[in-house]
Structure formats: C-alpha cells, structure tokens
Image (cartoon, rainbow, N blue to C red; front, side):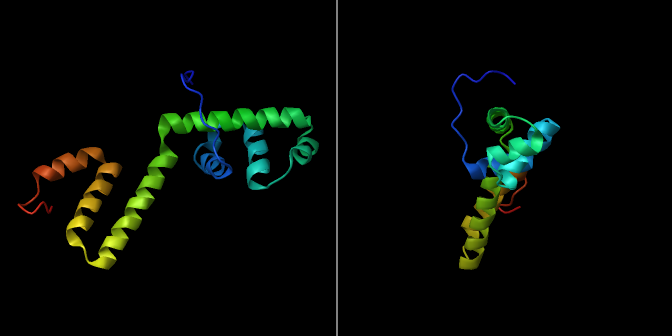
Length: 134
C-alpha cells in the first residue's frame, strides 16, 4: 500500500467491524483471527494473548496494525462507504415511493443506477423520452 500523505482518522468500532466483513480475508490468517476475537467475539487483549500465546502488547500491536491496514483498504477501495450510500439511496427511494413523489423518485433511481454502473447513466440519458423517463 502506498504511504498516505495525511494520517487516517481512527475508525470507530462499528467501522472496523464492517471493514472486517469486507476486507478481513485480505489480512493474514493470524491477524484476522486476532481481529475477529477482539471485534467479533469481544475478548480482551489478555484473553486473546492467553489463547494465541502472544503477549498482551503483541496482540495490541497486531490489532492496531490490522485496523490501520483495513482503514487503508477502505480509503483506496471505498466499498463500505459506497454500500452505505447505496443503502441510504434505496431508503430514500422507498420513502419517495410511499409519498407518491414520482419525479424525485425517478431522479433518485437514476442516481442509484449511476452509483452502481456509472456508464449506464450517460447511456440512459441519451435513450430517454422527453420526460427524462427511460
């Protein structure tokens, strides 16, 4: 991974859990095990040290490096943030549908399509009728 020019903000516990779901397989098996024990199983550093045979400080260092690596992958790949945006947009579309607001709903759905497949939006703009409908 290239060095970051700006230090990364410390991700929240929830962020790290999401990062593990998305990028956990990219960690070494040992590091992933420690991260899962700490974040998924909620074991203490001392409990993980006892289970893995490392020192408490060694476990802490592995977890800290794992968190940093996961956060770096998110900065590069944006998978978690993209999926959060997709979920929010789908929720917005559902709310607009329930309100019966068809024009904002159409715009939201076109934006959603643009998030999923960016080139589709440009092609669909050209293939719409006069109302902007596909």
